[in-house]
Length: 494
Ligand SMILES: Cc1cc2nc3c(=O)[nH]c(=O)nc-3n(C[C@H](O)[C@H](O)[C@H](O)COP(=O)(O)OP(=O)(O)OC[C@H]3O[C@@H](n4cnc5c(N)ncnc54)[C@H](O)[C@@H]3O)c2cc1C
Image 1 (cartoon, rainbow, N blue to C red):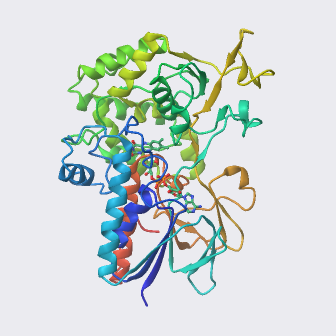
Image 2: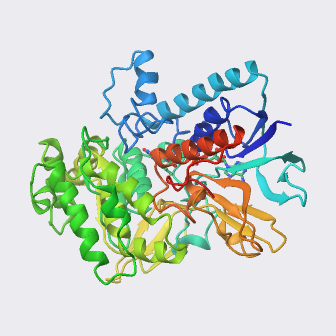
Image 3: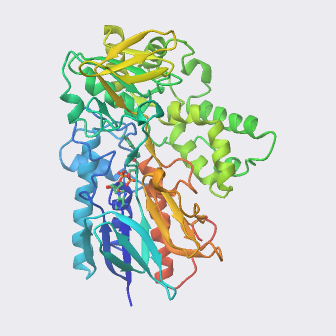
């Protein structure tokens, strides 16, 4: 009997896996469960051409190795792109959608039944004799042999400051789709809660008609600036040294720093890291200096990033989840500043807004936010006791990672919203990205990919990570289809 695969979540990660399952022998049916059109998830489902990827075409591909499949797709349609370019995110959405449709035809021609079931998955119930029932929010239940959870990021973080006001007409809890921001009046004064990628998207969209925008976050720090995130022509780091890093060692921080510095030095022919970044205290000065460095090709650190992400993911995969979280927590600032840095184009637009006086960055959150008594908008109280009137507030503090909860009887509850996740416990996830039976520890035929793999993977907000994960999973399934144990050296296996 062939396998019946159920992919829950049809964003970029789900499509990546789908294209591989479509050509894996022994699969009789593939059902993709997603309330939205397949391929158009949170990041790449946007339709606004202003919003760019912060990863180059080279790594923004459903195929993790070889020539970028996105580059091939865009070039075939006449887009004059280079592997280093940052393209609008909607193009990646179209690419994922088209690749899904193409591979769907391939699978159907080979006799595999493919369905898109438009609903949300709420639970996965294991059967005692193998197989799983996926419970959906439309009342339907799907039975399959293999379940792949690709839930992505769709629950925004709503900062405590405004949580009591959700539903207020002058509060936008997530910037996407950005049509609502575009409709705000040109004279509006807008407070954006956040200073990282989603906040920058919001500032760029709002700044288009000269609206006055204040970005605020506890640090007020913007990400660094890069002109590409591509794979380097030749490797700049030694993955073996990364794998030998011992998180419990007192030398861990020194050794990790040494590996980063030597990778950056190799990428930049020895240029000192200090000369590649700005230490300016004021955000506008720092942005201006880092933009100048990126525009003039003086940021070789950027060419170590793709390999550093892979090395972090690979070397920390075998660590206990708590250890991984604790160590990564110490580096959160560096990760969000450099791994999630912004394209030169975005930096230029932000700097124009900052120097033109339409954008301000405040490095602390307000003390209080209350609805204005008369009329509309908000009264925002700052630490110096100053109170100002704001017309609209936009939350842009990122997304919650999808939460899985496991009951003692092996049932998995799928909640994008952590506020709902009170029952059960976080499941154990194996190195092969399989959810484990809480009683025996044996791996279930339930896999996690992309953002859903966060209990095992360190850096998940990156399509290349999902593509690498999907390739590993599909390879294991292929070996299993031939009834041969897969090699254990890759760390892919259960
Ligand atoms: C604003 C933003 C910008 C980003 N930019 C980049 C970038 O430039 N480059 C890059 O590599 N990465 C980027 N990322 C990270 C990106 O999210 C990852 O690359 C990821 O691979 C995207 O694919 P995904 O399928 O994991 O998630 P998503 O694209 O979010 O897709 C998840 C899908 O699952 C569905 N879903 C959720 N819950 C359920 C459920 N219970 N049942 C059924 N369906 C469900 C949703 O409807 C959605 O279609 C960005 C992320 C964000 C938020």
